[in-house]
Length: 234
Ligand code: AMP
Image (cartoon, rainbow, N blue to C red; front, side, top):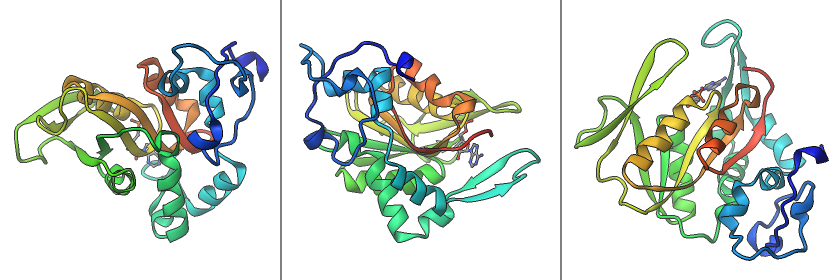
């Protein structure tokens, strides 16, 4: 495990910056101050990804609040249904609080949510961090002038859209969705936001399916990724 952690030494006052976050391992426990190391740069490093893992208690609670539906929408897929989590006041609140907890206290201009479950979580997160909300929608749903991006689905391609004035150049944006699988949807959303000049601070998901590589895809785009629980497989 230790072999996974590059030798990066960071000192950030964890207690004030990320209360409740479990620092898992590695040199990022750091007692050495690095000139020029900001919280955002630290969040991009692999060791800080590990440091951002959530507590086992939180994972257990959230996992219990999610309903698993085998073979939906097709054989072999386990659908991770968050409607049960949304219906549980305590779990919903915890998920929203924890999603952006590493960025709490930083200036966030907008939260962008991906249709449709990202709207529910993203709207609550936006309220929580006193930011505006941007809907990223499937093609043909937004009424004003739009920017559009195509992305690959398992079968074929699709398009997503944003209003062209939804974000101003340089605005600090956090992207939210319920789940990241292959990362195709979130990658397209990041590209769409960047097309309009957004500074994408992070992408946050309740659920990660790490075997599908989506979170790594976003990290390759220099986007720090926050996920709360992960499930094996698809
Ligand atoms: P992807 O683009 O492959 O990362 O897929 C992510 C999008 O598809 C998210 O908006 C999810 O809501 C949805 N999704 C993908 N796989 C699942 C799954 N197993 N259970 C629930 N939603 C899923």
